[in-house]
Image (cartoon, rainbow, N blue to C red; front, side, top):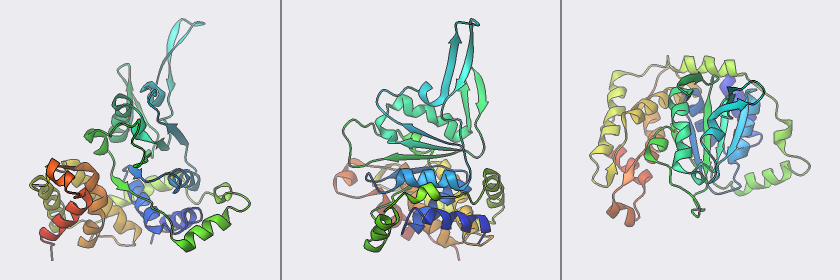
Length: 308
């Protein structure tokens, strides 16, 4: 395994006890130059994970608390008039950072949520016709609490499609929960967390991930899985070509983290539910019958032939 990837996993595990897979998948998204949507109940460590990641790579970190009255310019920044000079000047918003935590993103209006679309896909912000590039790396980790639907706005399909992966942290097991309580007896472990990498290390890894080999048969397998979602009768909206590209990239990142210079079919099958599910829309009958999008993806993986 790459030394930087191992150091990051070990460092994050100091504050996220018993969540090795979640840590690995967040790094998969970061290394593949994607973004993550964390959907889970309050208090399981979504914000802590983001802060720990920022500290671990010495990154510029900003947090935006999404609320119903949040405006797009509260995210991107805007032109400010100076009465002293009589001129307008641009004041950057919190989106100009390396790691952005969008906390409870579904509490803001769709208009405000859309302020992140250009940033997440093109890594730039357009203000008054001028394009302003974002720092590199740029990684968005957005959270939403599924049990609190009052006062929330569902994320539009275009917004969901920008996230490489949707993850759940889940409650810790008994041993991990005991360790969490004991570790915070005097102070939070996050306060003592030291950096183990730099943002340049992340950029170097992102470049290395692009060189991970993906055989043509696996490229075809990835696209066949994606296309199968568009023919599934239980879905009224299948996965987009962006889903195929992100599944391709995240599989490269997973192979890199696990010390391989090539992707295998198991990588595709493991990551497909986290990469594809949130992009789908169930039809009315399937939705009321209790079918989940995650289950549909698992079913489709059983029907698409795996390359030998």
